[in-house]
Amino acid sequence: MAISISQEAFDSMVRENMEDLGMDPDEALADAVEALTLQGADLSGIVKRVPGEATAAEVSPVVRVLDELKASLSASGGSEQDLDGLVSLFDELRNLCCSGEGSENAAIAVRNGVVEALVALCASARVEQERLLASALKSLSSVLRDVASTEKFRRSEGPKIVMDLLQGGSENSDLLDAGFSVVAAGSAGNEVVKESFMDLKVDELILRVMKDKSKSNVQSLYDAIRVLLKPDDNRVVASQVYGYSRRFAEIGVAEVLVNALREQVAPSSLPSACAALKSIAVNDEICRSISENGGIDVLLQCIDEAGEQKNKVVARSCCSLLSKLAASDANKSIIIQRGGFDRFLKLTSRFSEDPAIIQEVMSMVTVLTLRSPENAARAMEEGYGTLAIQSMQRFPSSGQTQKQACLMIRNLVARNPENRTVLLNDGAEKLIRKAMALHGSCKDAASSALRDLGLDNYNA
Image (cartoon, rainbow, N blue to C red):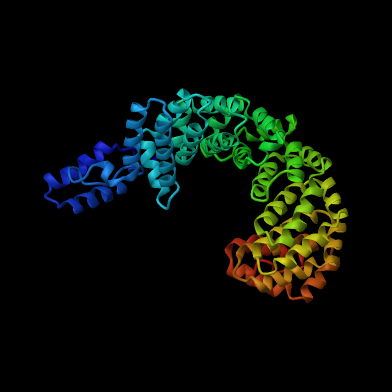
């Protein structure tokens, strides 16, 4: 854990360097930063200035905006002009926290009480002040970056206040988008905040909003699902998110997501919707239910369209989700019956110079051929052995491509000895050994592939 230090303590150390040690201002500041860093102090959010030469507001634009916000909130009479001024300041704060120095600016804002101030404003503002609330919520989401900030959000009763706003402002898409962006940012890396939102029945609210087709393109809603169901809090030994995923599936969120993918989701929101559905598909039963509701057919169609439109982001997202669904043996058969092998190969031909797409396709085929000699034989007939060899030849510097090719080769030959000779004759051994030598991340996959190809010295 980093040592906590206040702005006052930092300023005092700089001042002592000048007064007691006779350092010039720049040297005193640099020495304080170096000494505290070596001691393990957390300097995030500290305004690094020489006391007396400049105020914090003069050094940091974030402090200036916060000072103006505090003054405006104190003097605000609720007029349209006052609201316009507040919205302008919120927008400026958000831009500062999303800029190239956004992480440090957000840390300064959090250290200076911005989380508590924004949550308090959201609690006191009227639901009718939708433009003000949406702007405040967007600013809040931009400063929630780490556990320190999300804990301040939780202790300020942020989850309840945001849920109340979402419940009351569910007719305004902009307010919904801003509110769910706070749900996502506040839940990231914080298991306790996730639990707070789930206790407040955020899953039921999400379902209700998604059933309204006019609100189906609120992208932050999909991001909120993904983050709520991600076990990303390193402080927790056993996360509860697996149970949350099952809850989302049980109340019908997975089914509504499939319908959204089929009918309503804009191309810009489709990757987020795929990621949300993937986070719900945590067991065989849920994966099969997604297929029964037409999820596989929808994804195959999306993959075809993404290939025709050269949309790499959508193609990768759909392939990644389909790989997750293919973990169910029942779904493997459906994907292959729907011409999956042929469609994936066409996708690789359209993105022949893009290793990321080829990796996703090889990952899917690896899943589809796992413990299935019949599928492995069919994959070889379709040309996936050739795809593995060509990918390793074309992208020798891509460690992930080399690793995924090795994994796919292993499944193609593990239970199909007739495929070994074909791949060895095509030069698989030399390529795999080269990948093992060049990429440490490939060692285990390459060694397993060589072993399953029937080679004795597979660790060499």
